Amino acid sequence: EPEVTQTPSHQVTQMGQEVILRCVPISNHLYFYWYRQILGQKVEFLVSFYNNEISEKSEIFDDQFSVERPDGSNFTLKIRSTKLEDSAMYFCASSEFLTGGNEQFFGPGTRLTVL
Amino acid sequence: GENVEQHPSTLSVQEGDSAVIKCTYSDSASNYFPWYKQELGKRPQLIIDIRSNVGEKKDQRIAVTLNKTAKHFSLHITETQPEDSAVYFCAASPYGQNFVFGPGTRLSVLP
Image (tube, rainbow over all chains, first blue to last red; front, side):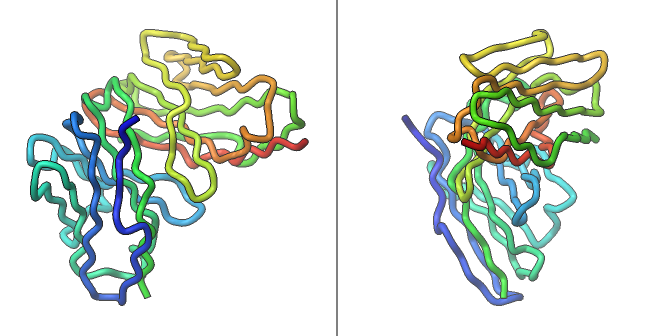
């Protein structure tokens, strides 16, 4: 069964550094998402992406964040200047259709630790 | 925007008993309500979902009920097993928008 994959599984960085988290969505899916989960808390929506542009973003997704689909398979989340409070598990998800009716498949996550 | 609340935050049941987790949502435009199970250190995985045109859905030991008038939906797990122990998240999705998750319920099934 196809799965969403993410790399790296764990990223440690210094405050102020840039990080890029990578995701490979399921190949026939058209909608892509980033979520984050601070340890012990709920999953929070960051951004959704469709047709090579952002379709929606949350208040968390400020100017420090950007997303890109650099080729036909990868979907990346970049944090330009990391802060301590960016430490969290970041999940990529993809779905075939609009979220109003279809399952989002989650990747295994990237644990980001900002020191 | 949408706000999803979830209760209880923790739930302990004896193996074989039933577990019920309840969620409420605020946006009447929400029309899709998935439930995800997350085991420690793993990704959330969909276990059941329901759309707003349906009041109840069942899949083996798992069922979900939806009351659109009251804006609440519930997860029911019968004959619980130790492997059901996990954190369960409900979510609501206004059409064309993204999931808003509840804060989660940590379910412990005691042998």
